[in-house]
Length: 207
Image (cartoon, rainbow, N blue to C red; front, side):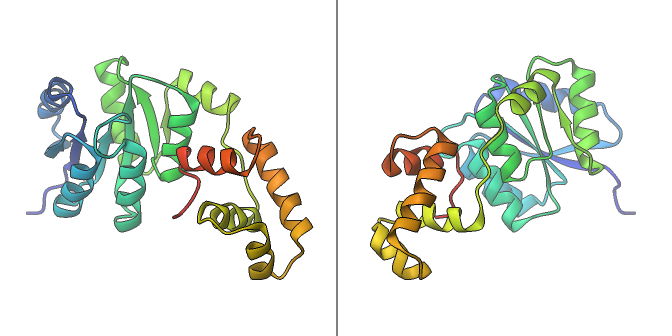
């Protein structure tokens, strides 16, 4: 008979946190921990091998952070749900994780009941955010770019000059400059170099 338990992969660079969450889940009849990983790179490989239903993912980890691990897991396994479990509810980090495909994010200091409820919520296709995280995300959302602005930003990140970009897109150099000015304004950057740096840190580029 096929198990109906929700399979969970726990990802955190602190063994005590992994063990604590695993111990919490052990007594739940509808949940089972199928694996653990201590960094984002290991999380991607383990998720590919174990095909969990839910990945409980820390944000700040060595080798590869939780945002990039989330993006890679969702690219290869779109049906796998990802719940961010974090100590820091900063809007930038959590917003990047949500943009990468996470179904929700909660603080590590929430109650055990809230942790279990969050796992079940994302497993069933729902979304969940701790109140303080939801407020931070709402107050400081990631900038939205048009498709052309993203192409120009990615081209700038690859080292193309304004003239190169203009030729590629069959538009004027002045039009490229106008788009870059709009991009800098949205990111709060002083110039294209800073805009590219900020966009890469926010994981807004597909390079």
